[in-house]
Length: 136
Image (cartoon, rainbow, N blue to C red; front, side, top):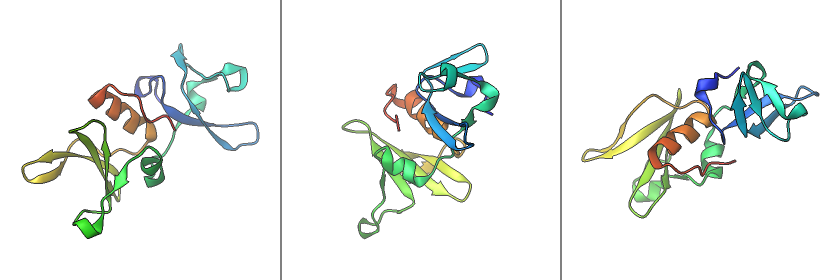
């Protein structure tokens, strides 16, 4: 189950379909304990049947993040996404999830808590940039 306050329109989440297959969808609306999407049965699901989608390195690649290149002295577990001419978002894959990083005089330093779900990455990126680009 996912909390209503944790998601927003555009987030990727999943539910078990009629055949008990995990089915991913984008949130098109949220109201009164339901999540809406035109492709869902009856176009809505109660929040208790909606689950957060686990964040994996494949998602980062699909969203356009690039892993560091060893031949250039970069950490291959650190992914970057350039969202404008001068700025990037950095995330390091760790044992416990994906740690956001901030550029500083001393290199990249951790900030915030590790991310474990796709909607967390989507929400963080939106909060930082006001762009909704990770659509899956």
